Length: 108
Image 1 (spheres, rainbow, N blue to C red):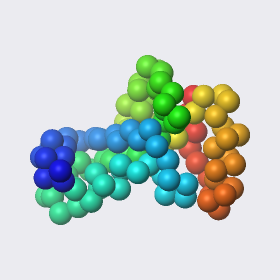
Image 2 (image 1 turned 180 degrees about the vertical axis):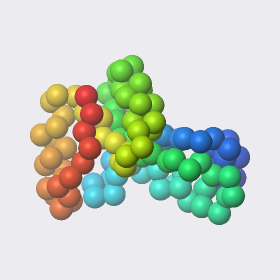
Image 3 (image 1 turned 30 degrees about the horizontal axis):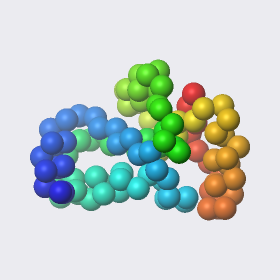
Image 4 (image 1 turned 45 degrees about the horizontal axis):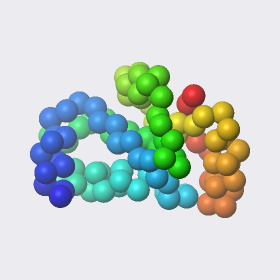
């Protein structure tokens, strides 16, 4: 429903797309779909952030939502933002190695 998504998001200054899935080497699966829906819209949000968290069905802690908002307010923000619990980092690094990626911004 690209038109409905674009209508809902256009006019907002900042949008964070939280994906609870991961395509190794590409990031969250929904974020590119949102970007495509906004592609030719004149008043699309100037700040779009891809956030990957809650992998494996895990809950995203309340503090992480505040971190997302704070991150969007930073002048030097760059995505994607990857949210992990302490035990998730090594598992993610394995996925990165498989995908040939070595850098990520990690919160939590």
